[in-house]
Length: 463
Image (tube, rainbow, N blue to C red; front, top):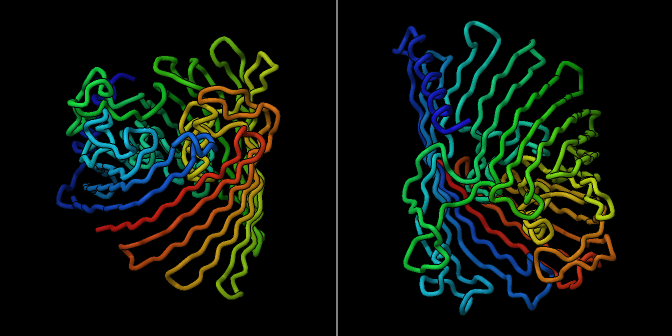
């Protein structure tokens, strides 16, 4: 879908919504915003070799402003603008390791850059009197489908700045307990649909320190998808989701595990069973299609058992589970590597989502993975929560040296141990803070076994 078609459809929906309204007097307006301030430290995150100087220490500031217009209770227009800029105090590998405009690293300065349309959509309930809701435009699917296992972030290359999808979604309410979503997604490699404020287009920003940085990449390649997603909450103490996802990934601009074009079909299901005080969460999916000239078949899924102790001090919750994502076997002509589709986000680890880039050539590309995970959550006070996690990581296939200087042993599948700690403090309904720490002790999957560290301190304000 080209930019013109997408914008035209959006305009038609808005016109239809407004023309069908009978009572503009009921129009209501809402607005608000948020400010997120983070300090992050990445230590030895890329290659597990202390000599490679890949440490980063920086601040990041994300500002969002949103507005919503509700018309006649059935129609909504929503828009959100977002900017995130960063200030690095240390960037390993640059001249003097203190980035500034004199060393071709202007993208690391304290710049207010790229104010983008984070969301811009029209929502229509009860389309033409039918049990169908429509939403067309730039929208988020955060926490909407299967705990984010396959659908979560439509713009993974910009980190947590945005998560949006350029999408058209129709939800058919089959009855009070069952819904069926039809979704079309079109996510380009960089912004092509809506204007960007304060962006200077340049042929090659890295070769000229007097020019601003090139546009922020959103994806590795142009991506397109069609989704059929069923949700069922009709069964007592059970919740079920089933889905079919067809996705295409272009070759132009691709790199690493997305260096070839691909067409991929994914079929799977998610189930959540409540057997208080226990809860079972499980998901499984199979993928088939092609990657370049090779056939592709992959498998992925997870299972977790949660136990709540609501009557005990601190109301602890204990969770244990296993994650499996198939890996590509180098001895086979077929590609068996799991494709995370739209799930290139730090759902298991903020540190390891970065480390995977050294293996796959793509940020956040979860694949070839076994994770054995134990979680403990404590509500230490009414306003504080402590989370302690321990992960043992393995690979399903050995990986030969590839995109970085030789970092893989090629003889072991043991990725290592990854403990995590997170502390949340809710100051008020509008102000929250948290601290996150992760420490990776690499296994023999890597040539070097120097530990990696991720630290984050965050304050978020909503207004």
